Length: 343
Image (cartoon, rainbow, N blue to C red):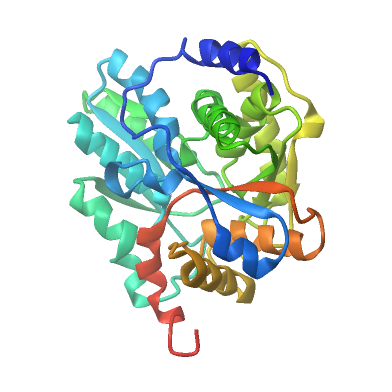
């Protein structure tokens, strides 16, 4: 990477205004305890859980850009959706509250069996209500945006001015917003005196990975972006990453290679939202070595994938890796039953 390439990409990104909803740049920290325990490469963590508003998370970085259009079009309501414990929904609800907008959320039921009685009422579900969102219970059909769009049309018919926020805030513009994280990693790693061999993260609705792929292609061309599939749908995730990355590249006027897109399967556990032994191990290691709270649906499965790849010898001691902590700590409370004396 060169200072010129960072400046050029920063200039391109600056054409897209942001609202200032989140605290940027987020910290990049060295994980000495976990790195030492694993005995492999040095692991750094990009603290996207510290974006600020509404318990933070990676979606706020996307919303910072996407919702500029909502304000510009004078909307009065944000409409989005997700499962009961969706981190994305919680961040949309928090953004709406901060911006003085109404919020309607399509809450999908049936994608996973509730793991505990607390699942329906605690964590993100509680925060959605606290932030004033109106919740619409709908069945999961596999179509992530259909129910959200139906609510949009219903609100329009009632005379409102709703703004559609896609599932996971995943879109071309959302990926543009998230490409700023790659730029920050490039700037921060340069200041800290290391070069990341890879950026590893959990990948589901695909917009985060799409943004990292496009941003890294411009700012960190020798850094591999590795998405860990947490949806147990690696082919679908990879296809969506390609779609959103191409849309983002077109908006930014840059390019990337299809070879830049890597989605690693095999670490999602039995199904989306269902933790397995590797998930719990990742949570324990992060908590006990680094005092980090990872949720069992997203960030812990991403770290479980990273740990497995290190143990397989993909990276050597002396190399540096960046793990993206996408947030999601509130969902921990919906899975408290997993954390007993044996863990």
